Each structure stands twice: as structure tokens, then as C-alpha cells.
Image (cartoon, rainbow, N blue to C red):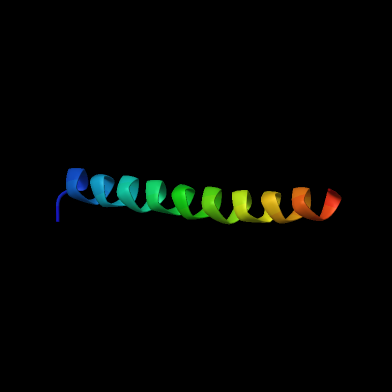
Length: 37
């Protein structure tokens, strides 16, 4: 694998990781807001 291919894979993994984190965070946030109400 070339450096460009590795960099591309890492970027995809990073975006996927951010996507998962944002989903988990939004779910937690909704639960907290729901309990607060």
C-alpha cells in the first residue's frame, strides 16, 4: 500500500469514528434532556 492509500483509509476511519461518536453523544444528550424535563 502506498502512503496515499493509507492516508485515505485513515481519513475514512476517522470520519466513521466521528460519526459514531456524534451518534452516541446525541443519544446521551437526548436522554439527559428527557430526564431533565
